[in-house]
Every structure is written in structure tokens, then in C-alpha cells.
Amino acid sequence: VPKAVVFDLDGVLADTAVLHRAAWQQLADEIGVPLDEATAARMKGVDRRGSLDILLERAPRAYGEAEKETLAARKNAHYVELIGRLGPQDLLPGARAAVESVRRAGLKTALASASRNAPQLLDRLGIATLFDYVVDANRIARSKPDPEIFLAAARGLGLAAQDCLGVEDAAAGIAALQAAGMAAVGIGHAQELDKADVLLPDIAAFDISRFIA
Ligand code: B16
Ligand code: MG
Image 1 (cartoon, rainbow, N blue to C red):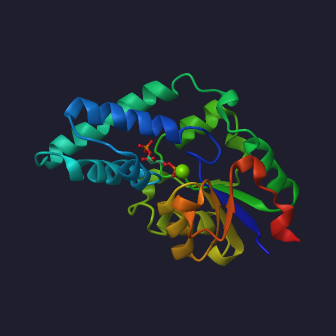
Image 2 (tube, rainbow, N blue to C red):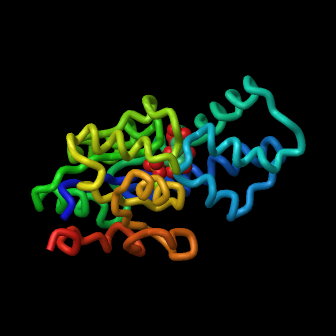
């Protein structure tokens, strides 16, 4: 029986996965690199620099370190522009209720987002106060699928990873949860998230009573 639920943000609580996708597409178009759906799926949940490296696998030329920094910053500028007008209405349906129901059931809650924009997003979405602990992505060295971010969430809550249930929309996130020793709830489709312990179509289908009964 879990003592806490660790939530991913982009694609689980907020519909921002499509905005990351759009910002990467804009950058890809600007530099003339093709970006297909399979590649975009591999970039999902992966941190900014790791995502860029995946995008550049198809680049016609090599990019140096300084250029990569510039490209990553450019993608982020596109993304920051896209999230500039977000508000509570951009929470995915059932997202707030899902986190609140976990708290009401007496479990702790944490956020484990790889996004360095997560603090601003939580404020804009009006859900910052619903989490007992929010992992600071700036202090995470290794991107999902590495378990580091989820281990940091458990540590921040003062719990063992085995006592936490994780909710993720990306294959890299499910792999990270399993490497951390957490049970993994996947939000999305079986083709992408076949490794999840439990698969739900969306966060509205998340029912904590199913996991604590
Ligand atoms: P940023 P999550 C992840 O957030 C996104 O899924 C991923 O697409 C993005 O590249 C990553 O955050 C880093 O975001 O560029 O804003 O720092 O799914 O872990 O909540
Ligand atoms: Mg995500």
C-alpha cells in the first residue's frame, strides 16, 4: 500500500506535452532537421539537453557545445512564449481532483517534473500548494529514464521509493520509475507505455482508492 503518490507534470497534470512538442518542432523547422512522431515520442519526458541530442541525431551536420546551448535556449524561449498565457483552465480534466483525492486519502504528494519551468507552471495552474514536495529539476544531474528524479522525490518526502506510486505519461518516465523501484501508473497508450504496471487513458481515470484498498 503506497504512502505517497509522485506525479509527473507535463502530459499528466497539464496539457503541456503538446507545447513542448510544438516548441521543438519550431526549432527543428528553423534549423532544417526532420522531426517525426517516433522521434518526438522518444524526446518526451527527457530533459531539455537530452531532448536536443535526440533531435540532432538527424541533423545534416555536427553541432558544437556552445551552439547546442544556444539551440536549447532557443527552444526554451519558444516554450516560454507558449506557456505565457496558461492558467488553471489548462489543467487536464480531473488533474486537480486526482491530487486532492490523494491528499484526502491521507497520502503525501510530490511533483517530479524534469522541467525547469515547472515552478512557474505550478503557480500559473494554481496547484503549487497541493504538493508536500517539489523536486528542483535544476539539481537533477541525470535525465529520465535515470531514476534520480524519483529517488529525490522519495527522499524529499522522507519515504522509501518502494512506498511511492508514480504517475507518468512518457516511456522514459515509466523506465525511471521502475529503475527507482516505484510502482508505475502510465497515462496514455499501450504502444508507448507497455511497461507500465497499470495503464490509464488519462488522469481523470486515476482513482486512488484502487491502490489503497
Ligand atoms: P524544460 P515532465 C519534461 O517534463 C517534459 O516532458 C519534457 O518534454 C521536457 O523536455 C522536460 O520536462 C524539460 O523541460 O525544457 O522546461 O526544462 O514530463 O518531467 O513534467
Ligand atoms: Mg511528462
